[in-house]
Every structure is written in C-alpha cells, then in structure tokens.
Image (cartoon, rainbow, N blue to C red):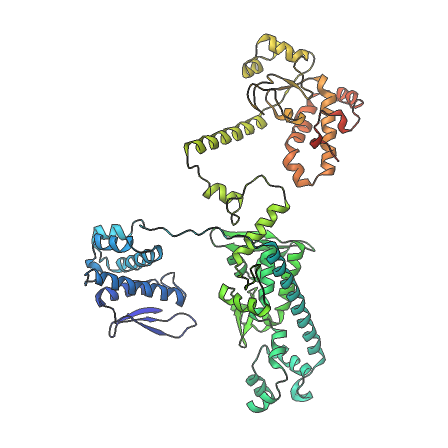
Length: 566
C-alpha cells in the first residue's frame, strides 16, 4: 500500500518507489475527524492508485489539507467530511487561491468516490466548476542576444572539453592493464573502471584485495578517471542546453528521450521522435549540427550503457551519481550549481537564470527573425497554429467584424483559385458564352469589349477593373500582372499569348533567383495555373509563334522597381 491512514496516532503513512516509508503526522490538527477523511482521500490519490508520484507533490497536498482543517475549525466546523455544507465550502474556496481549491476539491472527490459520504447538493458542488482560476503569468521573454551568445559559446566549449577528456581517457585505458598485475597507476585504473563500471574506491579495493585505507592512499584520482569515462549530471547539462537551443523541442520532450527515438535518415541528419506532454507523439528532422551533437553524447555515454541496468540503458540522458546509474533530470534547482560553477552572468550582472522553456522561446524568436513571416507574435512561446486555434479571440464587435471580413476574403480567394480559367479562341462569340455571361453579370456591350480587346490589362482582358477584388472598390485594380492568372474576372485570348509567355519566363527567372520555399509561397500558385491550365488550352503552333516575341528580360513586363529581379 503506497499510502494509507494510520488512526492511532493519526498520520499518513507514505511509501513511494525508491524512497523509505515515511509517517506524516496530522494528529495535531483541531478537527481530527475531517483530517482523517481528507487524509484518506489523499492516500487514494497516491501512485499507483492515483496521479501523485512525487514526495514534494504529496507534501504540498498535505500542507493544503492542514490549512483547510484549521480554517474550517476557525469557522466553527468540527465534523467529518459528510457534514460539510455548500455555504461553508463556498466561503472557504472563495477566499482561497486556485491551488488550494484544486487540491481540496481533489481530495474530497477521491474520498467521496470511495464512501459516497457527501450530501447530494454538496457533491454536485465538489464535482462542479472551480470558483477560482489559475493566475496566468506573462509569456517568458527570449534571452537577450548577448546572454544567448555567452550561453551558447560556453556550452560549445564545454562539449568540446568533455569530448576531448573522454576520448583521452579511453585512449589511456587502452594502454593499461589489470592493476592486480601491473600495479596502480592512471592507465591501469582507467583500464579497470572500463571493465567494472563506475565503481567506488571500496569496490576497487575489494577487487585488488586491499584494505580501505590502502585504497584511499592509492586512489590516484579515481573520481576524476571515473567522471571522464562515465558522464555525470553536470556533463549532460551543456549537451542538453545546446540541443534545446538548436532544435526548439519542448523540455519534457527532450528529457524523456530514449535510444529507440533516434534514427538516422541520411548521412548527416537524424529523425528524433519525442513526446510533447500536451499533444502526444511528435518528430523532428535534426539539423546537421544538432545530429552531430546528439551522436557525440550517445558516444560519450556508450561506456555507461554497457554497465547500466536494462531499465536505464535505453535512456538517452544516462548519467552516474555517487557510482550509481540514473536518468538525468534537469530541473531549475539542478541547473543552478552549473551556472554558479561556470559563472554564467546575465546582462544585469547577476547569475543567469536558466529556464529550458526560454530556450524554446528564444529559438522561435530567432527563427522568426531569420525567415520572412507574415505573423505578428502574440506569445513567442506558441506557434502560429496554437495561437490561431486556441488563443486568438475577438473582444469587441468591431474586431469581430474585421475578422469576419478577413475570413470572407480568404474564402473568396480559395474559391477564385478553384475556379476554371476562361480561355477562348478567335472564333468565340458572345452567344457561345452564356454561362460566363450569367456568372459575371455582363451586358452585351461589355462582352464584346472583352472579346475585342478593349479591356486588355496586359495579362488578360478584365470584366470589371473597378470590382475591387484586389483593391478598394471603385478604384482601378492595383494587382500585379501575375495576379490576373487566378482572377475570376480575367479572360485569356490568343492575343495575350506573348504576355503570358513573358510571365512564364519571369517565373523561371524568379525560381532561379529565390529560395525554393519563398518561391512556393509567392509565385507557385500562379506559375502552376499558367503552365497547367491556361497555356495547354492554346494550339501549340500559336505558342511557338508567340515565343519568338519573348526576349526573356524584366523590361518586357510592367513591373515596379521592387518587383524587378536582381
């Protein structure tokens, strides 16, 4: 039983995996009946029966239990859980903070699920919605550039130093032999530890048949050799910080990595699978630098994996502590000694506060500065998808109206891209386009102007330049030449072929001059429509004849200065 209530004297008996059994006394409280019931509910929440698996978490619930008993006793309540009233609980929760209400509700629910002790009105209240809400802090800011550069440079230097030290000690071990035969020296000590694992001085003395005093006198830097061969917690810190800074993976995803999560996808790139606590399984193809860093850590910890127990050997962040293997954790209080040891300073001059969530924030912020982006960041800790799906809201009617217009424009753009381009030949007359006449709402005179070329706008003929699809209504269309390729008001005739081919050549020049990702965002939809849907509808002979008029220079197109290729 991981946790149970001891009635005489009243205490909570706590037994968590890997920890000694502990009695937490609660008999000094003014209402032992309520204390015993809440303690039983708390016991039902402890692992493996409930979600509480850490001593610190159980102690925080115990502190809240004591607070609730004392405050309700001060209000005059002296009975068990079954005598609680709605007014008493409401008064207590309304004057408490979120965590107090959350913990007491959780204990009451666990107790009631066992004994059904609460009156029905109180039960509905306990299992209902919280009165208080958690206080949401401001987004974590990215590290300042100078702070970030100092941290990254330090981590790189430490990784190089630790790697060189490890390889040097491995080479020294290859020169050694059994100390029982060749005597005790650094090479022989490294040889022995490489075969026995990160053993202590006492275990080495037992292997050599020495007394503890003799082993202490002849240690010859045993701890230094052991730390060089088998990485410690402090050795893993620069590797983890660099990997987080270079990939932007969430802290819980990095900490829980196992060797099966790492797979090479080529000669220079790794595919890393990890679990993000709020979403589930995710994966990321690492850059060449991040792949080399992770590979170096796996090599650094390879000797430890040979000796580690099966349940730990698959953990990526396998370290040794006091001659024992353990999976590394990287809580803030554990990073603090590393910061102090290496004198990592903030711009303000004090010790730099390392928060691995800020590594991700800084990574996202820097990525946004390196690449062109349309989005304005609301919270640098969130991706655009998360902000759009969960955090954006329109607070006023004016904002809602603006968002409605944006959505309508986006939907209209999608419909325009899905529409079939109107391509005609010289034999087409107005009476042969009844569907298009009805769709565009054209009169006979307007359609004749379209077919006759009086409404040409370089790329096509436009049914209504004042329609305002790409600019203010009532004003001439300000769109660039290629926008006509996706416009539902455009009509393409054989006379437009030279200009269409000039656009095709322009797209080819832009494809050669721009990064592929940028071209895909800016020009790809237009280039695809031109090559796949418009030009194939013209006779090949007409296309070849018009090709002779194309000089393949930007001067052929009515472009502004900022639209010219370099």
